[in-house]
Length: 308
Image (cartoon, rainbow, N blue to C red):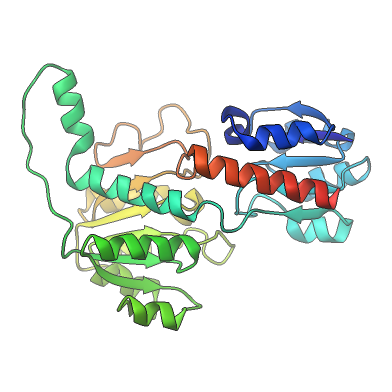
């Protein structure tokens, strides 16, 4: 069996997942993803399976793979939005993912971003590194209102931590776990727009679909009347219209945008976000801890071997 490994987190992190992959005895080729369609098309038919990250598995790629040996895409991670799963099903290519393996570390990353913003952490570290001693004034998060969009595994972990920090809890999701909402006294909003209007912080924690692509857009922000909202995105860059973010910051509708994801990754040079001091970007590392990588890696190898 010949396997393609494209997940950089899997490749870069030592652990039991590396040993598990080697123990399969499969021939392994490695490419650093995310891999675009034009790179995949000439090579994909050579492989029986792929442990993939956020590579571009379009219908064209899958058809080319099926004309050769391709049997399975084992997604390292959760989101399948970069895979044409309908085409995969039609072509008989199995697609698996790793639910329930990164919710803790992503939720921790949400609070890393929130605290860094309100405590001026980034600026203060750079000030002291520059040999200066300028003490800025930050904000407490205790008592602020946080709205979680997407009350799945990650969203619930964000709620649990927000409760510990003393935030007031709000959420929006089409499918609400009523017992969980009652347990944490979550106020449920009946629309995304309503949630944005009543909270101080929004954390985006849902899967990307065609329905919610650019759900945060200029039209929605223009209709907001609370002002000064901090937007956190550790889900998918495509949930947010990047032009709308610039508009929201210029109009002081948003006080900041903290994101771990971009519409196009890696980030392009001279992107307008880079020089904006109200935007903090981390390079899609929300689930990139030793513990989470090993869990995801082991699951992706298991999924591969059981389905190839």
